[in-house]
Length: 118
Image 1 (cartoon, rainbow, N blue to C red):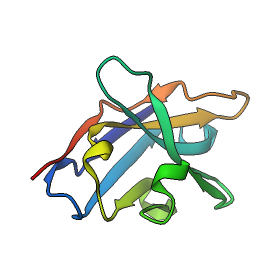
Image 2 (cartoon, rainbow, N blue to C red; image 1 turned 30 degrees about the vertical axis):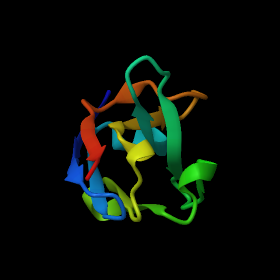
Image 3 (cartoon, one colour; image 1 turned 90 degrees about the horizontal axis):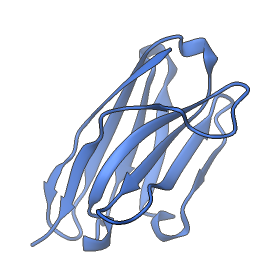
């Protein structure tokens, strides 16, 4: 079992920046990939960015060039640096873990609200 705790959300003006953090604990060695997802009311949760244990990463097209996912293995923490934020980025952001042997995230944090508004 893996526990994930997100932090760093908040209210920011368009063009502003935020950094989200996700601290993992528990069976960390069972984690293959960590990802950031987001969800708005009435819509499905969508993958924003992911990073694998070997450091490979990928992004949703609409955030490429604006968001950067990174990790600090010593702290078992994954970050999402979000720059040039837009109102469409407003959502609840979740940290998710894909464990070895699974093709989908099944460990989730509680979510953190990001609101981009003037």
